Length: 131
Image (cartoon, rainbow, N blue to C red; front, side, top):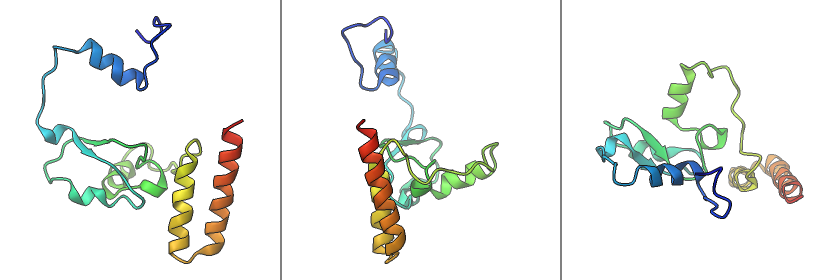
């Protein structure tokens, strides 16, 4: 459907096409299998999830595999995975707003030199992303 549709552009191609193909064949599972949450800087949202959560579904562009949004749950599971030794990127370089958010966190902590560094990185990403 994605490759054969010359006129239809899907915003979230994988999810949109799956939703179309599964229409009328859906079986809803208990909420514990799709616990929706969004992340902010620092990833404190884990604390509001229920204890019986099986699957956490991050519903924003902020993801715990960037240091800025690392959550305790994600940290726990990644530490025992094959990716444990892989260094997490600080922010998503394709989304300058994440770098800007980190700059604001640093400024609020009165770490002004680092805040300036990340603000300059933010500007760099913004300028070169548009080209």
